[in-house]
Figure 1 (cartoon, rainbow, N blue to C red):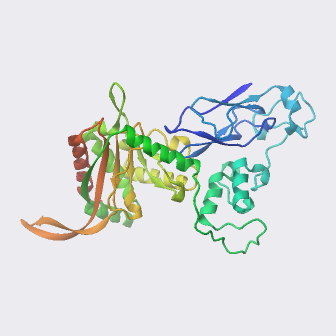
Figure 2: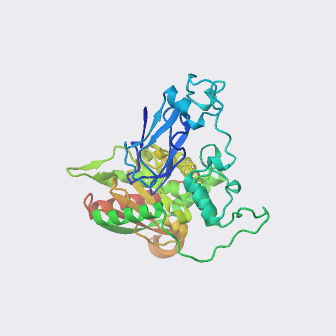
Figure 3: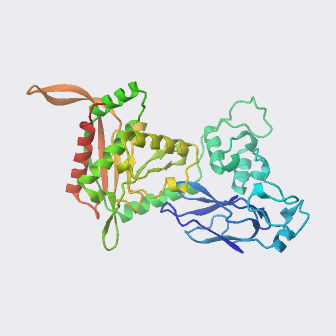
Length: 405
């Protein structure tokens, strides 16, 4: 028997079994998706560690899946393979079990058929969702492995209200949904639980500064003229990484016997997913990256997040978080520290032109500059006000003194 276990690396939040993609008695191939696990941030597929027959499911749907827990067992014995209902087409019970679909010997069940959004490729939760909303899965573009339709694909289709019900012609108008109560899904419940826990366990204090983006805007425009397009978020990540030198504990976390400061600056950036909440992909070792490298990494992570293709490693290991809530119009906010392994979160408000007073040729003058409010919310167990203000002072200084391109 081969054990199938919950991956050890998890983004610090509770995972549950969302759906089994194979049932007891089914033939499975090595590295084939076997079960979906869900946290408040991402749904991940756990692949089969070996080829054989799914002999036992230990954790059923909706069960909590803690790291290292036993999910299932796979039998690799030839007797189990011979007795599997999935052995159709097998001619010899003593044949070798293929280690992958491409290595299946003659007479063995061949590679899994191309998904084509066929019904046999749908997990139970996807089938239920399609039936509930009257959606034809063949009309949904799957983003799972090998194009398989996932629950997120169905949820996005329902939210967009652009899918056609089963039996409707392809030219039918998009469905219109009347206002109604929205039942909690597992992701929303997990977000609620984590929010309440964070506020209860970590004493939050927020400091507010104002940042002038004139120098950054000039640098960004100069690079764009050279064909290099960067978002303001890239500059914010770079400035945050440099500000860590002013107060290293900001990049730390509270432990029972110490404050542990991370040896690398790994910055998570909140990315909204519409009605499905948000995820926080992490720019690893941002302190060692150049501005352009940060920009490229952000583009890659944002694209994967919105396509629902983030890996577990993409959202794990963050030591600090940025919430650029200004992109959706917010002027000022004090985000909550959601990660127990972090001591602070930076909030960046909407960038807008405001009248400011500056000294020009020894006299006060009213000028119009691109400005934004920035907040640093800290775990007061880890750092105090003077460290918070020192960090924000350096962060603003980096932005306002950005060298010309």
